[in-house]
Length: 141
Image (cartoon, rainbow, N blue to C red; front, side, top):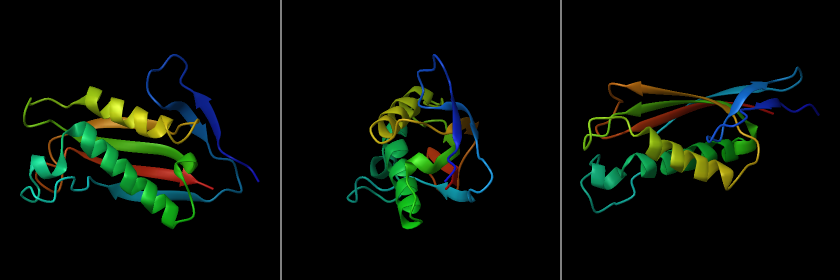
């Protein structure tokens, strides 16, 4: 069975591949964007206290993505590309790329050894108040 060919991003501190080739014979999946989960049910819904900072939201969003893949019979190792949408943290007025990247790297490096290609974009806002991140993904198996 063919597997995606990954081209490492040499010297990158991020858990990313420079490129991923999907050979013929594999099914390509495009997954809808996943979003953060509540980490404090006692906090007001959709508040920053309920959802956490960018790093916390990154971890819960990746966990949701991993859950979707698992329901499909796939895992994080099947990811070929992720597109990340980040919103500026209201506390700082700036996108927390460092917080995102640290949580993203930790989550993926604990679970897989080869990584998807990745795009990170800053956007003005997302569907729900205080969502700081959404992650959409492609996978192949």
